[in-house]
Image (cartoon, rainbow, N blue to C red):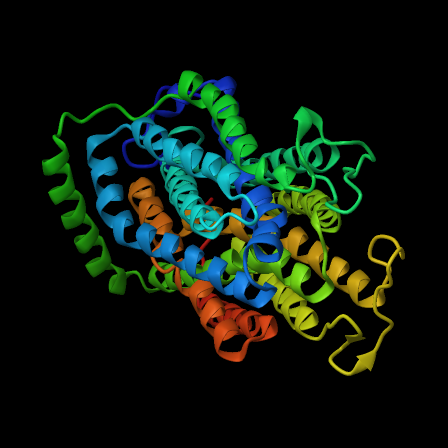
Length: 469
């Protein structure tokens, strides 16, 4: 590398000779490792199903309440994202914002320990902690993503994105294995998946192992996010005060939005990303709750399911990154959406005693072992398919953004990309919750996501992508 700036370098980035060392990039990637337990343990496989089965009145009510909480968190993100994004863009450093919202993640996650079954405040504490932690995790991730363009040249953003997702999945896998093997026990047997009593004196009957997923998430984040603060370089301060930065940030956002009609491919992609990301967030938020309601899965069944799904997710993120380099992000995203549509339709067709809507199948029997019925096996296979394509979908979306953004303004448009992924993130979960409540059916809620994926695929299909040399 020479000292000359790369012709594809993002606005405000250092010249090519000044790209940070590998340890700085590795520390940034470790951020995904530090936050993934929140999404794996709390929103999907451990705490959310525990909430639906042990705290809420029934599975449908639990899914609806969880959906409203997820929607509220998404609405907060949507309302605050333009203002905070504009401030951070104009003041420079991202780490203070990551620290502030990381603190919300830690506090909210720790609160979940106090959601004791039978307590009159359990549901309120659980939902409040979940909303607080969700806002913290999502904003911390957004500001961390804004550091990407200062770490590697644009032609390596796809690699950086895919590697981050893969490492994050591995972090989720390890945290889930620890929770299932050492902490969370079956309330009937009092044993963990490893066949032992929970460590730390956790009471299985009081579901302390499930609730401990909150404090574990908080501690995990604090430990593993530290290298990013110590080793990864941040954007230099601009000297602007917060009030000045807020006014300028909102003004720049308005100007950029007004410019989008002149960039039809980019505008169409941002709209597509907004819609299919909503559906993906909702699908992961309700996957464990759906299985708990339809099949009666408890922590052990859901945990093993989560481990297997995370393994396929890690493999998918890594393979998706390589495929992205070969054929581009758009075909990878469309292929992933097609697989997600198949998975959603397949899940809708399942019941405890049937598959494909009308084909009878023997239900699970007590003592039959893990996933002993055919519907459970089919659900397991469809879940593994979702895991396999979710990572490539999200990683390829980030790399496609880099290809579509105007030369010299990649950093600015990555901020808009982050906004598009969050500005309506409340819609998917909220509509799932409304459909679930209206029809008193978990299947009705899931059917909403099919429409979201179809709309996102249609919009993306019309995006014209010119690959850069």
